[in-house]
Length: 143
Image (cartoon, rainbow, N blue to C red; front, side, top):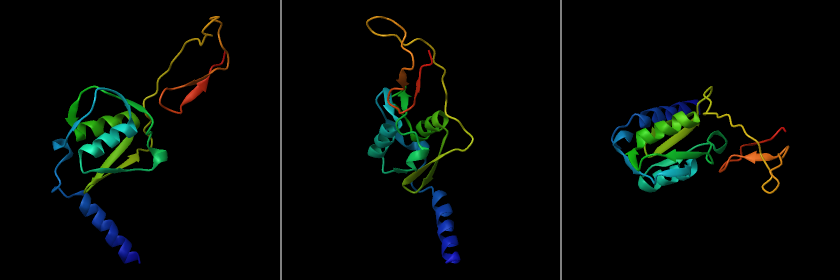
C-alpha cells in the first residue's frame, strides 16, 4: 500500500511538469468588462477552455466580486490577478487547475466610514447591519 501511494504521488509530480498541453500564457480568455464574482469568472474560463477548476469551497472566496478591466488577456495573467487579489495559488495538472489558499497571505482589506441614516427622517440608525454586496461579509454599526 505504501508503494502504491508513492507511485501515485510521483505521477502527480510528473503530470504537473508536462508541457504538451501548452502554456497558460498562450491561452487567451475573453471576459466582459465589469464586476463579476470569482465563481462566475472561473465558469467563464471553463467554458472557453478544456480546463476544469478544483478547490475546497471554504478556502476560495467564490462570492467575492472582481473587477475585469480588459476584455481579453492570457489565462496566466488573469489567474495571477486572482492570486494577488484573494491570496490564492494555482497549479495545473493536465486539464485541471487546482486552487489553494496561500497560508499567511491575507486578501485586500478596506476601511469604510460613514453614517447610516434613515431614508425619510435622515436620523442616524444605530446597530444597523451592513453587508458587502455580493458577499456574506458584513458588520453592524456602533452608533
